[in-house]
Amino acid sequence: MNTARFWILCGVVLGLTCSAHARLGETVAQVEARYGKPDLPKKNASASNREPTENPLRHYLHDGIKIEVRFLNGISVEETYRQTVRDDRNDVHLSKKDIETILNANSNGRLWTDEKNGHWTCENGYTAVKTDTGLLHVKDPAKIQAAKEAKEKSAKPPAGF
Image (cartoon, rainbow, N blue to C red):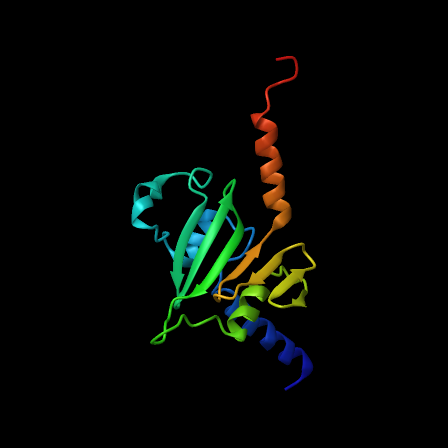
Protein backbone atom coordinates (compact mmCIF):
# COMPACT_ATOMS: atom_id res chain seq x y z
CA MET A 1 0.00 0.00 0.00
CA ASN A 2 1.43 3.37 -0.88
CA THR A 3 1.90 6.09 1.73
CA ALA A 4 -0.95 8.33 0.51
CA ARG A 5 -3.49 5.49 0.66
CA PHE A 6 -2.26 4.54 4.14
CA TRP A 7 -2.82 8.07 5.51
CA ILE A 8 -6.22 8.37 3.84
CA LEU A 9 -7.24 5.05 5.40
CA CYS A 10 -5.98 6.23 8.80
CA GLY A 11 -8.03 9.42 8.47
CA VAL A 12 -11.18 7.50 7.58
CA VAL A 13 -10.73 5.08 10.50
CA LEU A 14 -10.05 7.94 12.92
CA GLY A 15 -13.08 9.83 11.64
CA LEU A 16 -15.31 6.81 12.14
CA THR A 17 -14.06 6.07 15.64
CA CYS A 18 -14.30 9.71 16.73
CA SER A 19 -17.86 10.09 15.47
CA ALA A 20 -19.10 7.81 18.25
CA HIS A 21 -18.55 10.48 20.91
CA ALA A 22 -19.91 13.94 21.51
CA ARG A 23 -17.55 16.82 21.02
CA LEU A 24 -17.04 20.00 22.98
CA GLY A 25 -18.34 22.97 21.04
CA GLU A 26 -21.23 21.09 19.45
CA THR A 27 -24.75 22.47 19.59
CA VAL A 28 -27.68 20.67 21.19
CA ALA A 29 -28.92 19.77 17.69
CA GLN A 30 -25.55 18.25 16.73
CA VAL A 31 -25.36 16.17 19.91
CA GLU A 32 -28.98 15.01 19.49
CA ALA A 33 -28.30 14.10 15.86
CA ARG A 34 -25.55 11.81 17.14
CA TYR A 35 -27.43 10.28 20.12
CA GLY A 36 -31.12 11.14 19.83
CA LYS A 37 -33.13 12.91 22.50
CA PRO A 38 -31.55 13.03 25.96
CA ASP A 39 -32.43 10.49 28.62
CA LEU A 40 -33.27 12.79 31.51
CA PRO A 41 -33.55 11.58 35.09
CA LYS A 42 -37.19 11.11 36.14
CA LYS A 43 -37.04 14.00 38.61
CA ASN A 44 -36.21 16.34 35.69
CA ALA A 45 -38.48 14.68 33.12
CA SER A 46 -40.56 17.85 32.72
CA ALA A 47 -37.38 19.72 31.75
CA SER A 48 -37.06 17.96 28.39
CA ASN A 49 -38.68 20.83 26.49
CA ARG A 50 -36.69 23.56 28.18
CA GLU A 51 -33.96 25.50 26.44
CA PRO A 52 -30.37 24.43 27.15
CA THR A 53 -29.73 27.55 29.23
CA GLU A 54 -32.53 26.49 31.60
CA ASN A 55 -31.52 22.82 31.65
CA PRO A 56 -27.80 22.82 30.88
CA LEU A 57 -27.06 19.18 31.81
CA ARG A 58 -28.38 16.44 29.51
CA HIS A 59 -27.82 12.69 29.70
CA TYR A 60 -27.25 10.38 26.73
CA LEU A 61 -26.50 6.66 26.44
CA HIS A 62 -24.43 5.27 23.57
CA ASP A 63 -22.78 1.86 23.17
CA GLY A 64 -22.70 1.19 26.93
CA ILE A 65 -21.28 4.62 27.76
CA LYS A 66 -23.31 7.20 29.66
CA ILE A 67 -22.51 10.72 28.49
CA GLU A 68 -23.53 13.77 30.49
CA VAL A 69 -23.26 16.95 28.43
CA ARG A 70 -23.35 20.42 29.98
CA PHE A 71 -24.51 23.12 27.60
CA LEU A 72 -24.00 26.86 28.04
CA ASN A 73 -25.75 29.13 25.55
CA GLY A 74 -26.63 26.03 23.52
CA ILE A 75 -23.00 24.86 23.15
CA SER A 76 -21.40 21.81 24.79
CA VAL A 77 -18.73 23.01 27.24
CA GLU A 78 -18.31 20.01 29.53
CA GLU A 79 -18.82 16.28 29.05
CA THR A 80 -18.56 13.38 31.46
CA TYR A 81 -18.22 9.81 30.24
CA ARG A 82 -18.78 6.66 32.28
CA GLN A 83 -19.00 2.99 31.44
CA THR A 84 -22.44 1.65 32.34
CA VAL A 85 -21.43 -2.01 32.38
CA ARG A 86 -20.77 -3.56 35.80
CA ASP A 87 -19.16 -6.78 36.88
CA ASP A 88 -20.38 -8.61 39.99
CA ARG A 89 -18.92 -6.14 42.48
CA ASN A 90 -17.52 -3.08 40.73
CA ASP A 91 -18.07 -0.54 38.04
CA VAL A 92 -16.08 -1.21 34.89
CA HIS A 93 -13.86 1.75 34.03
CA LEU A 94 -13.40 3.19 30.55
CA SER A 95 -10.65 1.40 28.69
CA LYS A 96 -7.46 3.13 27.60
CA LYS A 97 -8.73 2.87 24.01
CA ASP A 98 -12.09 4.48 25.01
CA ILE A 99 -10.22 7.36 26.65
CA GLU A 100 -7.95 7.86 23.64
CA THR A 101 -10.96 7.86 21.31
CA ILE A 102 -12.84 10.39 23.45
CA LEU A 103 -9.80 12.67 23.72
CA ASN A 104 -9.19 12.46 19.95
CA ALA A 105 -12.85 13.31 19.30
CA ASN A 106 -12.40 16.43 21.42
CA SER A 107 -9.03 17.55 20.06
CA ASN A 108 -10.08 19.58 17.00
CA GLY A 109 -6.94 18.15 15.42
CA ARG A 110 -4.72 19.36 18.26
CA LEU A 111 -2.47 17.28 20.52
CA TRP A 112 -3.31 16.18 24.06
CA THR A 113 -0.52 16.08 26.65
CA ASP A 114 -0.67 13.41 29.33
CA GLU A 115 0.08 15.31 32.54
CA LYS A 116 0.08 11.96 34.40
CA ASN A 117 -2.19 10.79 37.21
CA GLY A 118 -5.25 10.90 34.97
CA HIS A 119 -4.92 14.54 33.84
CA TRP A 120 -4.59 15.75 30.25
CA THR A 121 -4.37 19.17 28.61
CA CYS A 122 -4.94 19.92 24.96
CA GLU A 123 -3.32 22.55 22.78
CA ASN A 124 -6.80 24.01 22.19
CA GLY A 125 -7.19 24.78 25.92
CA TYR A 126 -9.43 21.84 26.80
CA THR A 127 -8.72 19.76 29.90
CA ALA A 128 -9.58 16.18 30.87
CA VAL A 129 -9.50 14.33 34.18
CA LYS A 130 -10.10 10.66 34.91
CA THR A 131 -11.43 10.09 38.42
CA ASP A 132 -10.71 7.16 40.71
CA THR A 133 -14.29 6.00 40.11
CA GLY A 134 -13.68 5.71 36.37
CA LEU A 135 -15.37 8.88 35.13
CA LEU A 136 -13.71 10.93 32.41
CA HIS A 137 -14.47 14.68 32.55
CA VAL A 138 -13.60 16.74 29.46
CA LYS A 139 -14.21 20.49 29.48
CA ASP A 140 -13.51 23.83 27.86
CA PRO A 141 -12.46 26.03 30.82
CA ALA A 142 -12.29 29.21 28.70
CA LYS A 143 -15.93 28.98 27.55
CA ILE A 144 -17.11 28.11 31.06
CA GLN A 145 -15.26 31.11 32.51
CA ALA A 146 -16.53 33.45 29.77
CA ALA A 147 -20.14 32.36 30.42
CA LYS A 148 -19.68 32.87 34.17
CA GLU A 149 -18.28 36.36 33.63
CA ALA A 150 -21.08 37.27 31.21
CA LYS A 151 -23.70 36.10 33.73
CA GLU A 152 -22.05 38.10 36.53
CA LYS A 153 -21.86 41.18 34.32
CA SER A 154 -25.53 40.94 33.33
CA ALA A 155 -26.53 40.53 36.99
CA LYS A 156 -24.86 43.79 38.05
CA PRO A 157 -27.07 46.86 38.05
CA PRO A 158 -26.09 49.66 35.66
CA ALA A 159 -23.77 52.33 37.04
CA GLY A 160 -25.54 55.10 38.91
CA PHE A 161 -28.16 52.93 40.62
